[in-house]
Structures are given as structure tokens and as C-alpha cells.
Image 1 (tube, one colour):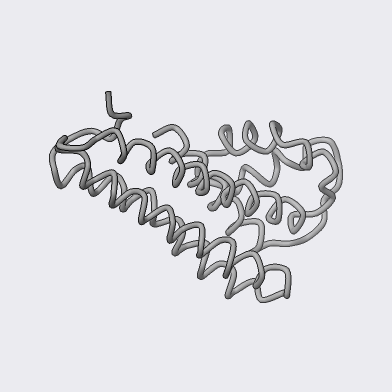
Image 2 (cartoon, rainbow, N blue to C red):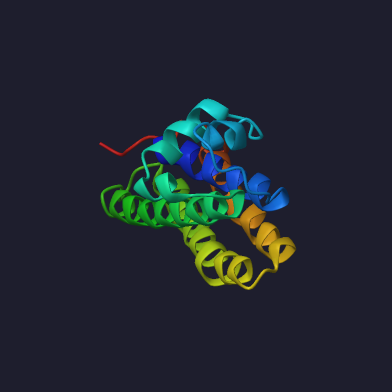
Length: 156
């Protein structure tokens, strides 16, 4: 799933940005911040596609934007997998798709109901805890497909 990578990068960026929240407002601010992630190129691409990133003046701003991106991506993954589950009756990937839908629903809860409120209240350690929990959704989904020995893909 392409969105799996985006949610992963957005959450990793949020973790790194929260951990080092000093302001660096200049032209290559996003690039410098993204260099702290495992996939700086994708991080830059994701943040540059979000119009709110243009107004970011601190790593806290980018962390907030990243949390919103991760949350929206998890929401999309829930909707996609709901649809895919409906279209996979009597197919071997149905169980894995159900596991993916549940994992992404948990990620949505971890992000929207736990991480974002903690982040906004200044509880960055608490926010990171829930971001890391949400990050496991992509792994849980991929592992569900590995368990049934299929590659994750959209049902036909």
C-alpha cells in the first residue's frame, strides 16, 4: 500500500520533530528537519505537498502538520480497507484486509484521540508514545499478509 509509506514517514517525522523542537525558520527548514528522519526525500515530498508546511516556523509546527497528515492517511487507509473487505468475500486476503482495517482504525484512535491532544497540551512524551503505537499499523497490516503468504494489494 502506497499510503503505508506515507503514514510511516509522517509519524517518524512527528517523533523526530517533537524530540527536537527548536525554531529554524529559513528556506531549507523542511529539508534540515527531514534529514533527521530515515527517509528524508519522502519526508520532504510529503511536507512540500501540504500547503500548511509553507507557514511552519518551527519543528513543532512541522510535527503538528505531520500528525495531521498521519491521521488523515490512517483515516484513508481505514476507508480503503473497508471497501476492499466488502469486495473480498470468499477470497484468501479477506482476513488480512480485516486485520489491516482494524490496525488502521486503532492508528486513527491513537493519533486523533491520544497523540494529537497530548501534543497540543505539551505532553510530548505522551504524544510520542501514541505515535509509536500508531506506527505499528503498517507493520500489523503487512504481517497479516505475510501470515497468509500473500502480498498486500488491492483486491480485484
